[in-house]
Image (cartoon, rainbow, N blue to C red; front, side):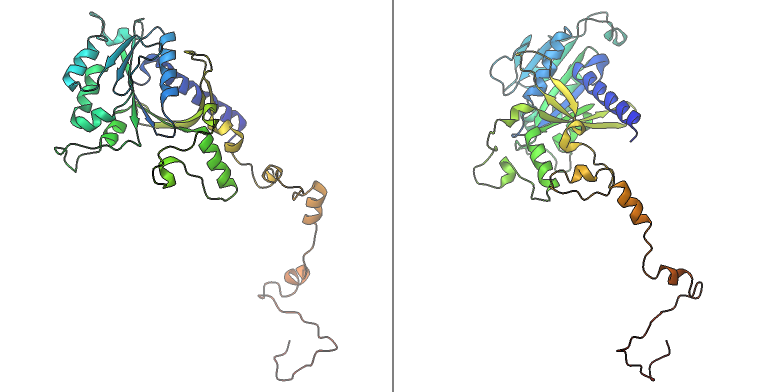
Length: 338
């Protein structure tokens, strides 16, 4: 990729990620965050809440698993044990569109709503058929929804669910206008290093296959940041995918998280070509395998053995074998003439 095109792609990807985090111009009415036990979605959710607060949006937090009210949240709704109809009524009572406002006024209206659901697993396990109704009832031109789904949590479906129906995660992925998959930056770096050395990739937590191990050991590197894999669906149906590094802000409640492309990381940078990137590939060696300009020109000027015989003798005749007999050779009359 040309340098100018690469710079344009980098700037466009970062601006698009910023637009999704800020939820400007209803960029994504339904944002789905997929996390695991190894890397939770809390840093990314907190970034959404902090940016929504800076934009003067009213933040509603729908809690299925969270006990205490998070920072910068205006309304805290406890959803565990509530029927879907009662939960919808409770949410819409706080973020109903203003009377007399039309969808065209959403861009100019200063009061917007950010609805955060900390876990969709209880709702998907209890009433998976109600997911479209739940989303369609609370999303409007003035409200955006950010919901978290835990990939590692087993989902026990009720017996009334038909085995031929789509899985709730498939349904959620189909309805979402933007999907974020979070993973540990430390684990991604260690996996990349193993791949570069042709070693077995390390595994953590459930993938270790050890009895009783659910989460890998805490090494202290998890605080460096997390990898966010973005998948945005445009109105045309085309999907835009990119991977980023999100380093949370050290200030409490601050939305100053640093954002960068994963390809900007030294280990994930694109590999150079064979001749131009020889020094970078052999950076760990104590000797140099590359060629200098003089060595390269000398190599091009070398005449290979029997080169003249291949071009001058027997040209166009399929070639012949030239053999000079030595003193110690014993000529056999029965052999074919050379």
